[in-house]
Image (cartoon, one colour):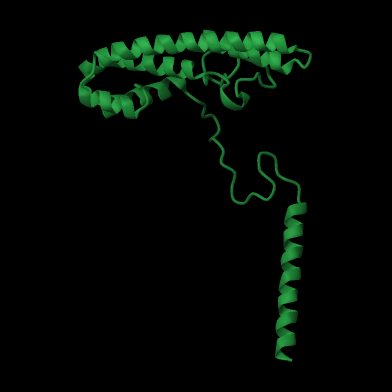
Length: 191
């Protein structure tokens, strides 16, 4: 008798659990949320936009602190470090767009990879070549030889960017102390 009540109780719990699960799965997902996601949606406060200049200043300040550079040292070192940082981004091919096609033009058009409120800037050679490849790949009638030709262009522009990066890294290396060299290596700025 006791075993029968235990079995019936377990079956009842299973049925209630299945009903609750099916009910939550059958509800339509709210815009901007995954189906079945729990908790509040993280959103930016109204009126708050991405400020690229502020972000750049914060990044520079953090690098300066990590390198232990004084204000005076940073006036010389800072531009060289930032140039290497920019060239490294370009040489990696993850400038605008990068992985997962993030640089595609949005529903409102606009520049590839642009953010609302961010000033427009000129595309680099690597970004231009990558954008041309992306456009070509979106064209279903593009032929393999056309794609192969653009792949060669992208690879050549990336190689040129890598060579420019290597030259700037050598210049930077001559400007820093051994301790700073170690920090730059850990930061991924030097190879």
